[in-house]
Image (cartoon, rainbow, N blue to C red; front, side, top):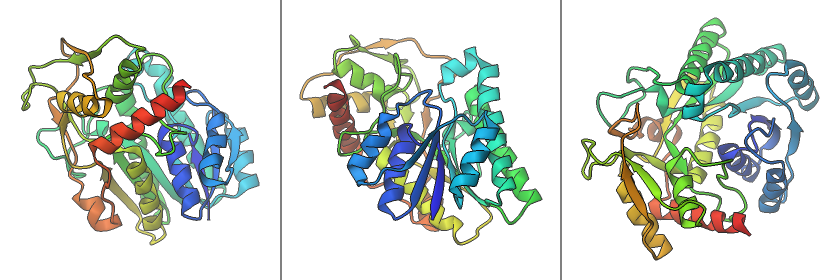
Amino acid sequence: MKILVTGGTGYIGSHTVVRLIENGFDSVIVDNLSNSKEDVVDKIRQITNVRPAFYKADLLDKESLSEIVKKEKPEAVIHFAGLKAVGESVALPLKYYHNNITGTLHLLEVMQENGIKDIVFSSSATVYGKPESVPIKEDFPLSATNPYGATKLMIEDILRDLYKADPTMNIAILRYFNPVGAHKSGLIGENPNGIPNNLVPYMMQVAAGKLEYLRVFGDDYNTKDGTGVRDYIHVEDLAGGHISALKKLAQRPGIVTYNLGTGIGYSVLDMVKEFSGVLGRELPYKICGRRPGDIDECYADTSLAKKEIGFAAEKNLKDMFVDGWNFQKTAER
């Protein structure tokens, strides 16, 4: 079975392509390389001994996308492609709405034109806005606190409307919590351009000496140590969740939605302590003021994914840091 993977050279996309190959799927990657590099395709080949088909193309260019799909004839799609920096989305909302929504519409139109009925969509826990309680279940109210989150929620709505119009579609919406870590080979991982937006890549750069110290935004939250609590999941576990979702679509379920996380909340200071243990030295940090929009705690109820697709995260926090640090050191060479 051939799978079209948009954004397949990105952080989560590349790990998922590895899992697809390992599970006997053929992969076709479409990526505009706006936040990744083409050498990731060669690294996937090094890991799997298979070089997936790769096309440098933008979903905003519908004609190019259509040509690729007609040539490759994929049977299903995993859709990762999209801009994803929350802060940038606040500063550049039109860029985010145009790229993420228009790109997805082009993809869905091309799927429709070519009779492709199955899609796994990379959504996010940001669609829950500020939840009233934790753990977060899939049937909680949905809202968005920034343009990035709004694009994820809009695409979910588009997919729900598409299914109503065409019940022969099979759609899996996967709401990720916080992916961290890297492939155990050290060849692929998260390597953002510039100063990272997310906690763990920031910690990695502090440990590597690129940044002086970790800024901890707020120590007065209603949590055990005053710092924000989040659900972190190893990117390899997350990649495995996409294989489980594809297998679910083969059962023709219609539209399904799952949280992908560990169901465990870790505070920022928990993270600092665990990573310091992996490093064998203290990671320097300073407490700063809160960032606007940050919430006290956010972690998943993962029982539905376990029940319906057999998904449960296997790797722990130490695994996340060991593999992430191994990738960081490999990337430095």
